[in-house]
Image (tube, rainbow, N blue to C red; front, side, top):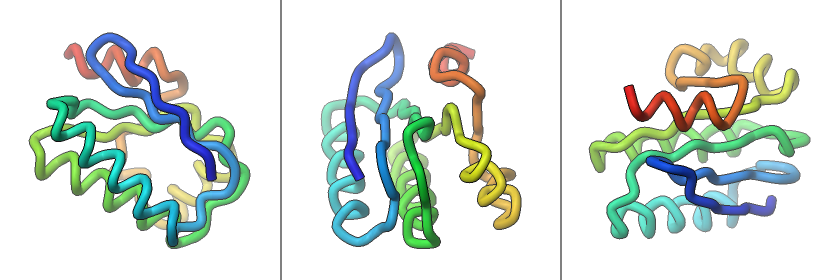
Length: 113
């Protein structure tokens, strides 16, 4: 899994690319979130448009990320989920836990409300 980070207005956009399988990726992702929190950046959008596959450990990574941000009085929202990832979120009922948006712009705008 590769990550690309960029700031957009009131949020930090983390673009995930490849297969999200947990393991070392989870440690890196968690470390990145803690670094953002330390910098006072608590609004995170995870762009999933380039994710080809995600297993249960990958889902756990996202849940852990959401929990980390909520504990820091922030939030983590999903954007551009592929059909495959969307169905995974629906099957696991995680779609009810995450705020999910069709575009990164919509997700970023949602922090202003």
